[in-house]
Image (cartoon, rainbow, N blue to C red; front, side, top):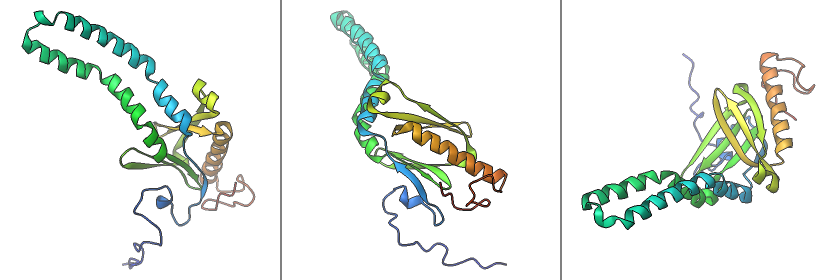
Length: 213
């Protein structure tokens, strides 16, 4: 039986106390690009994306609440408690919008994206944090969306589809350049896995070599 290397789980000189992208980078892994959402566009998006639905929803509920208040004398006291609970739940879209606005600054501060020579890493959080990885071999498509807010702030949203899962890299600076480079990295590495030969750049002869572009 092969002996297990007893030094395998000895931690290197790296700080694991804080969840960062660097804390999950492997020994043979190199960061090619790293960034975070642009602050202004991220917060504006949180305010404006749900605003029309939330404001219309709130307007209807305020109207019905005012009608209820005007006829409160005719409503049994037991029914008033039910109405209060009903509208508290009925206003959930509004509460979600308010939460999205209040938490936007904190979420933007904690959110980071990175492309390495092996995978795409997305770090998100509010109180805690979540780090998700997408390996290039599972990446099906890379799409770009630049809306009005994004265009004004000179950013864009990159949509990734991998194994039927959709992930958005929000408010990325230089979105056209970054999405084009990401597609090239994914194509090169997928090609290298399927055809480990000189279809990749001349300096990369086969799979498990370092991605140098």
